[in-house]
Length: 251
Ligand SMILES: O=C(CO)COP(=O)(O)O
Image (tube, rainbow, N blue to C red; front, side, top):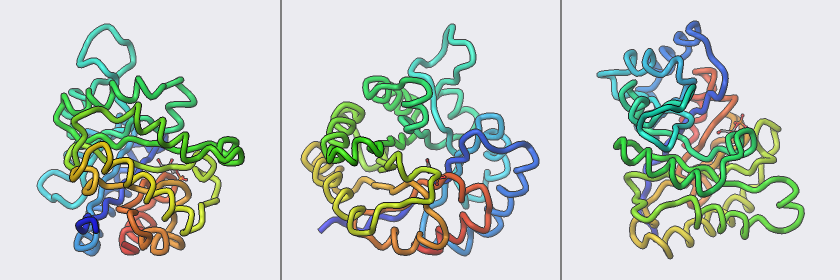
């Protein structure tokens, strides 16, 4: 048996949100008290909004603020990039790394994800490392092999329940309205848990494994009830406070 793991509902706003969206974040802060008995909340807005959101959240402890990516280096001649240290300075407590959109749009390999995870730790933050198979890989029956490879290469030695969260996000379920069945999610999360325990022992038993991909208020309770699902990484439905909070209520 693994210990009870407190769920995390994390919102990934991706490339969405202007200053006007601060009102939505404020609504999340206002409604968070109703759900903090059930889950921790984290919102990862675009970097342009991060410091502003962190200022609003400061002192409330209701919703943590995170980032969606970072550079592996702490500083230097990397035009347009942001380091984990800068994101920490802006108020982030966690950084998503290895999202499939970054892997696809920016050619991020597992080796790069590994380096970025260590960068997140160097800045004292929690890394949320994303893994997941494409439709093509799924159809070819390669899902577990792909996940094993991604996890082996992306997760550094020294991963602990405190510094690392895994997010299983099947690429074909992202933004499509499609989700795996609860049975599939159970099987895959159990597989991930076994790998984490093999490699990180007790820490692996306590690490959060989030599910991501078309999580909505209507399917959250069923998905969150699955064994070894310790929360969600939510895209589209995290942009609206009402939906985001409703998902957390489903924990
Ligand atoms: O990619 C995701 C979160 O990181 C999931 O996105 P959707 O919830 O919009 O499918």
